[in-house]
Image 1 (tube, rainbow, N blue to C red):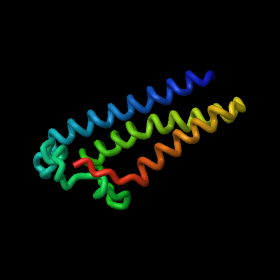
Image 2 (spheres, one colour):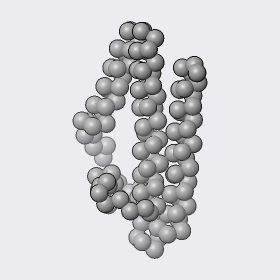
Image 3 (cartoon, rainbow, N blue to C red):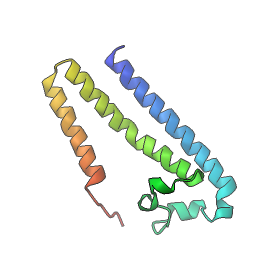
Image 4 (cartoon, rainbow, N blue to C red):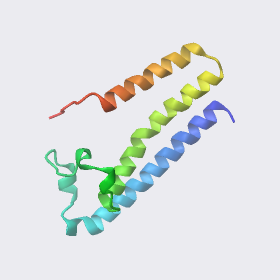
Length: 121
């Protein structure tokens, strides 16, 4: 299988899975969220109590907000997986220049996700 095919399948599967989870989460939120206090206005509010800081793996319960979180996590991780696939492919091809460049890209992404605390408001 060619490198472009692997990248294409990776991106397609990630986007389709993400969109599916986001649509399911939105539908569930619409039908069940209003009774539990989680509505669209609360989720999109800058002062919302529903945010990723309150999302703990040990306290996962399957509800609309959790499904939305997983959809967003998959959407964010799809390009990261694409970069990782690129690193593997460039290593296999012994293309050191692009291997190093892609490693730097992955390092930049990881630093921005895990170490930068940007307050947009």
